[in-house]
Image 1: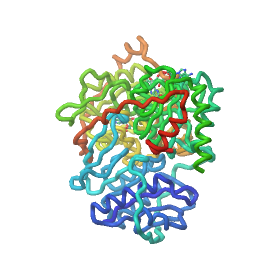
Image 2 (image 1 turned 90 degrees about the vertical axis):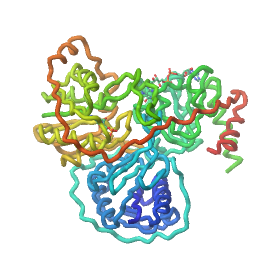
Image 3 (image 1 turned 180 degrees about the horizontal axis):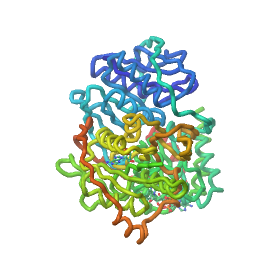
Image 4 (image 1 turned 45 degrees about the vertical axis):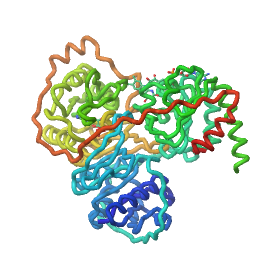
Length: 318
Length: 250
Ligand SMILES: Cc1cc2nc3c(=O)[nH]c(=O)nc-3n(C[C@H](O)[C@H](O)[C@H](O)COP(=O)(O)OP(=O)(O)OC[C@H]3O[C@@H](n4cnc5c(N)ncnc54)[C@H](O)[C@@H]3O)c2cc1C
Ligand SMILES: Nc1ncnc2c1ncn2[C@@H]1O[C@H](COP(=O)(O)O)[C@@H](O)[C@H]1O
């Protein structure tokens, strides 16, 4: 009956989104009066999960790395073994890759982009974003088993006192038909998906040669860099930085928009961010209506000043 | 090679989203519908396979007669035939089951769907189709090459913080997005395409009647935003102060 959580790790370290999933799973388990079981892959020390409410860890050893089909099958077998009625995962690329496969495997209803605890558990209703953050939908999942993907940074980390006991779990794994040939990943940069702070630049920055200050600001803040759609269409920045309705979604704690007008398609994709700051020369730019803090000013003056002030702040608060 | 592109019929990206019937139904009043942007990238890539590799391209939608103009647009862009599965799209699972049924019936080597629809944002239909039809699956696909003679495929998948190249084989389902083709490759139907689309088959298929497993029982719009707090460009220290002490985000 326990709530099953899929916990992602990267080189043995739990992702923050995974700890959020554990926290969410714990809160659902409390509502249902049950415990939390985690499925992990290739983890040696799972004690940290206890701090977020996990009671038991089923660890799968698999030397082949992530494969959506294989992982979905392993999680399915864990859910069956545990008799789980609720499975919780995150909104990372890997989790959202395997979730629909798992839903078919378990014949379970699946709700993605979930931003809050179930408003009720019988019937099981969750609040999720729809229309690309222009609205919320309250979605009832009517199957016996329910799968919920929690939106990044929507629930937060909630500490609990607990002890996670680890068991090795050896499901019968299917063979993989999708073989990874090469990976191209910047290991020194924060990804938009994981970032708590995102610094984003628009066409107001005039050209790719001006992104040095954006990168510096991001570095001072430990932030990821992003951009508006025209900026990636013009080739000033890579497509992977394009955020908005047709780009990546952003749900960071802080989103800083520099030289971005705030078109409806841009705002839709970043609206889930908690605090928004806009820096723009035009006080009429629509972004000012969506932002919490704004500076009407020239990015080429404001951003260097902001970097300087942040460095002073960091030095004082180090 | 037979390709199916799944087309979701969605409100134009500029649409204001409103609800009726006590916030239980999406208000379609005055809303323009378009091909889901992710599907448009997929359709354009399919046209490339048609032109360069002789593939045939069908498009399919699960929906009522109101979605036919969207399917006609896909035909005008260059698809060979359209299929409309005549039932309301209740949820992703039901849509995937309806599409899987047609795919099993007709046999497709490659099914291109979007990473997500911009209305429901389910991000589930392509993966579910793959699982239901026992096909290989690559999600968040930003590059795709097919060698039909060996039934093999090379795809690039977006991962958090980067991308990875994978090799796999047909039959294959992808969840596609920008990157499959560039924005500048997208096609606006021309007069000839629109005329030709009228002659192309648009087949209406009756549904198998798959049950929905999820139901959106109510909608809500985000709370209106309070006024922005302006900080003078001459006093940027104040912004740092507000972000630290008031917003508590740094
Ligand atoms: C189907 C569709 C999908 C779309 N999807 C997306 C999407 O996902 N994401 C997205 O971002 N857009 C999207 N768009 C595009 C969107 O409509 C806007 O065109 C785009 O967001 C504008 O980008 P921008 O704000 O960088 O540029 P602009 O609109 O050109 O704005 C530049 C801003 O910079 C300001 N500025 C100029 N100089 C300075 C300076 N020195 N200092 C400070 N500010 C300055 C200007 O006042 C202006 O407000 C989409 C459009 C369509 C039709
Ligand atoms: N009603 C539908 N008819 C045909 N294809 C659909 C439909 N709904 C979703 N799809 C496809 O599935 C993709 C993902 O949709 P979703 O799972 O709803 O986010 C879309 O981009 C389409 O390719």
